[in-house]
Image (cartoon, rainbow, N blue to C red):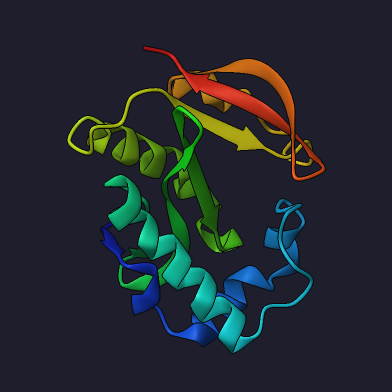
Length: 153
């Protein structure tokens, strides 16, 4: 299994739309819009890529064995870096390995505390302890409820 990481804007719009409009993916993304157009996807990708310039870190698009799998990485949220990971369903089993990879790169990127925010629709949560995260409570973000997990140092 080979993971490669790229700028989000390097991925064609049709691949993004397949991910961001996938019913099983958006069911776990309460902040997502109803339907992503080509223009909206490309503007979103540019905004995600801009985080690298603004913060010194950001998210990547992910290919697994050459196939587009989704996106993930760090996004600045207050004094923490939020670790996000959104994958096409056929790649969901690769989440733990990707999180470990991101966390391994955290020090080289100069990232301190790391959190993960999950919507309550994500009912399988026990594995977070195995990848170094502990439940830290609930919070509301843009009118939606999320479960917060913090990296255990």
